[in-house]
Length: 271
Image (cartoon, rainbow, N blue to C red; front, side, top):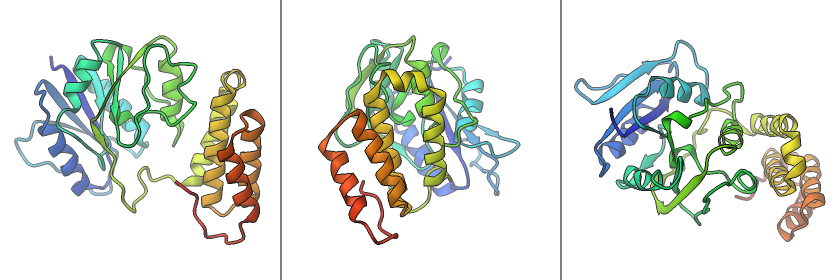
């Protein structure tokens, strides 16, 4: 039984997939299995003979959450890890996951930029800022909760809310995940879908957001930025104003005023 199962969902990106696989082969820990889940790509995934990879092809395209669930259900490793097909790992990714899982049932690593250090019971703060990418996350397999595949985006936010109820987290701050920046849509779903799913999330978990105004304010900020990226300045102002009412801060004031002055519908949201 391997120490890790590495689940890689993929859809129509063979070049990126090959680079993702190569980054797993270079790990300093060698006790792992790789499960590639082809999410019904138009051109079925083809791997060279002899590669140490289990390939599962979904019967129909179900999205990233569905593909990850298929891979997790087929896994035999002690712990589950995930890697998007357009991202890569640094060689010590699994080594750090192994170290982190000695401290808690969920371990996260750095993913570039200022690290967000999460340790212990983080349920009350997990949605106050950007949640850790699943590619930076390792979890004991017996603690895995399937992702809600009825969400086309935000499924990771739902998962973090659910999994942190009964599981503690540890952080190894060294970077292990490299998130690729490219012009293609990472998930195949644009800002309108992410906005809709964000509002759905806030509605379905209304009690949590009512009790955690910082999380609600942060979600409104993200909604405002996405509306701005679409040129929906009135909707962006409304979202930022809703966030300000919950958590007054200078950043949202600037976003609100910027949308108040905006006239160009093609301007994109700040990062």
